[in-house]
Every structure is written in structure tokens, then in C-alpha cells.
Length: 170
Figure (tube, rainbow, N blue to C red):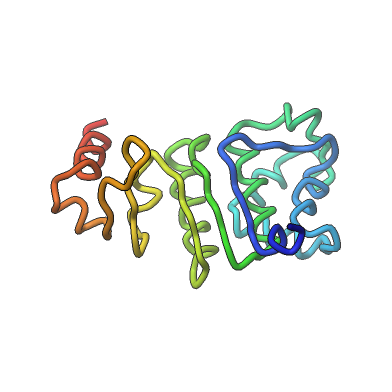
């Protein structure tokens, strides 16, 4: 089980941060990481700028479960952990759900870089998150409703196309 965990990186919708500093929370992805590796991971997750704006930068205490941070900031710290861990398999469970549109675009770009040449499972309701996937599987009522690329699914006019068009109107 431990070997399996080393090969998988997960970014959940509900982020769990520990009492401690920003650096300690990012280091959770790789306990032996240097501060340079932590900073590099934070930059990849588009978290570095907000971290440096905090009173003590990477040494800022975040409080119980990160109460001193916004939802989007917590999400980017979680994403930085996965960048630091650098696993071959990724699972993103609503990984950008807590982000505003501007932050989502920046983080989505980072997630796409991280996903390059890796097995990546993305669970998402925001279809912009999966638009560039090589293969999209749409689940409905516990079964596979359709699968294909973004273009194939939009052109098919099924469940995915309906969801996509509804999100365009919002």
C-alpha cells in the first residue's frame, strides 16, 4: 500500500492542511524536500506570489486547517504538494473547484504541465478542466454514458454536450 501511495498524487476538493507553516504543509508531499524544491513547486502551482505577500512568506503559520488562508490559496498549496511529490499517476478530484475564474486559469495551466506524460484521472464538473484531455469518460447514473475527446462529445450532442452548452451560458 505504501508503494502504491508513493506513485499517486491526489488533489482533493476538500483540502486538509496541518497546523504549521506554508513550507511545512507543502513539504508534506516530499518530507526530505529542500526550501528551493518547495519554492519551485509553489511557483509551478502559481502559489509563490501570494505566499511571498504573506507576513513571513514560506514561514507564515497558517493556523488550524489553514484558517488564515482563502479556499483558493489552500488549493494551490495542495497542488504545490503534488508538484513536489512528482508522482507518475495523478488524481484531480474537483482540483480547481475552490478557485475564482482568474486563479482557475493559472492553476489549470499548471495542472496541464504537471499532467504531461502521466496517467491523470480528473473528476470535474467544470468542463473547462477536462477540455484538453485525450479521453473523457462521462458517467451518468453509475454507468458510462459516453466517451471520447472534447470535440467528439460536443459534436455527439449527448450528456457532455448538454453540460458544456449549459456552462457556456453561465
